[in-house]
Amino acid sequence: MVDVDAVCARWREHGFSCDVWVDPPGQVWRDFVHATDELVMPVEGRIELEFGGRVYRPGVGEEVFIPAGAVHTVRNVGGTTARWLYGYRHA
Image 1 (cartoon, rainbow, N blue to C red):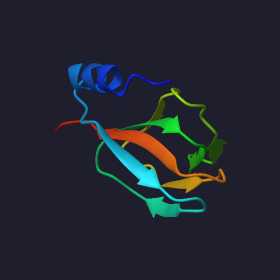
Image 2: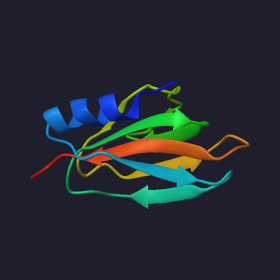
Image 3: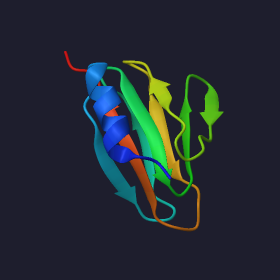
């Protein structure tokens, strides 16, 4: 179980925002690019991230850093709703 409040507090201390995103099974967010660094952490379900020529399947509570400018895709690869934290570095 992830302590969402604690994770968000830590991310904010390091200059990132923190919000929760919820996706239904099979949802795909393809080829996104952001001008700032991003953090992602699954808190429920299973997601897959693809960027930099690699595929990541983080477990619940595992943080993934996506650098600014990286074209990335996020998929809900589980059979249930996925909830994940995401945050962007403040300018």
